[in-house]
Length: 405
Image (cartoon, rainbow, N blue to C red; front, side):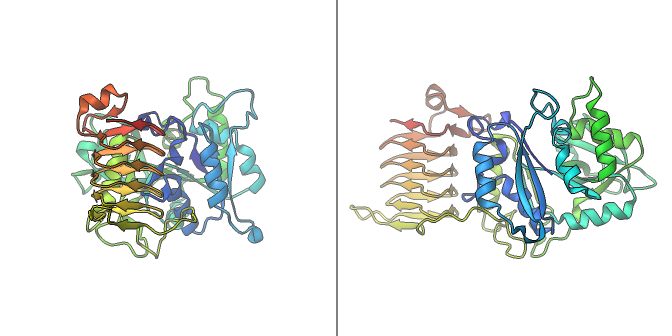
């Protein structure tokens, strides 16, 4: 079960017209493609995607991209909020499962894998399922090691001293995160991925649904309930082995829930030795196969050469006499003569005119930058035009805007 109903307020304005899992990433992908690719590569073939917030583009992407052969009962299906329990929307991730309980009753599984839809990583869930079964626990939480200094941003897992595979305490964003036994520099934090015994999950979800004081959240309510019963185990992501992974990109995981983390995750991709390697053919990340011409870099009428350095360039891109450095260009982007694009992320069909400058910016789909205009050069000017500028100086231009000089 893929939880894909999040509103994604911290990613605004990228989520103003689309669900967070549908936000484009790395040129040719959507954020949800990473979770679905991991499940498919792990041998899991019966997948439901629970959607809610502005889900049209997400539902369309799932239906167009994730078509599995039905011969052996395989499917990836979007399940919108169905209001099966009354005229109300999902109140939390646990409530999303409660209102979609028919998906479980129809399949009658022994085990259920529940994952988020907005993280960038590679993970073999088959190994986690095997560890869950061996542990004898009713619930298992995937955890990744994070530096003590940043662990307070996440749900922190404290393990049993006598049984390191068992969760002793689970605390949401504590001010004093406790380190992993034997690793004083790091704490274990939840990745938002879980494996459950199906009957135990159904019972916990139904009991939680009757509690008026519950937030009906998987991490905030369901997992703590299993911890209290002594039935919550932890799976350390450090020990998950992915074919084709290197020591540099092994155990990479990034929550791209903010503009800063979304931007930084893109910058991780374009380094000479990327921290996350998109080119691992042994564990591919699948995406929608679009019918576009190859990218092209050409001279303009004045002889200026279109070129790129340290960048990701998608199909359909044309750079005419402009320069692109340390950036990600999505399908159908155009860059005009004498324009300079640096340290930026350009989503689908962005048009950059002549003599334009783009610095440390994210331009959403269909943005048009007129001749001689700039983005990311003046914070005051960008704010005056209604653009978002983060504390770290990233300028975000909303979908479909015209940027004039």
